[in-house]
Amino acid sequence: MQSRLDTRHEAILRGYHNFPHNTAKHWQDVVADSADLNFDAVDGEFVIDLTQLPRHLESPLRRLAKRLAHGLQIWP
Image (cartoon, rainbow, N blue to C red):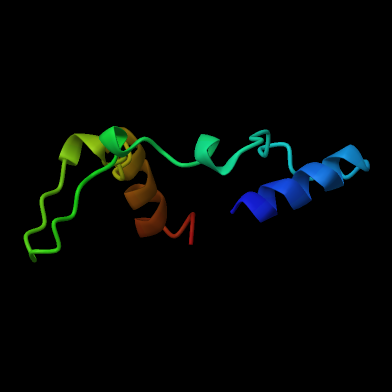
């Protein structure tokens, strides 16, 4: 990981600008803090913190509009 960061940093210094997200100088700056991560005890028990999951449903109004548009064959 450090080698990759070093290579990208060299490329940026030489004028390559396709790594705007890569500002870290050391690999430890890239690794997330374990306190912020979910834990897997590898015991087959899966505990999901639903508050951490993104909302995958659209608003009821938007779903209704899409359903109507599909039903009336206005929108494929």
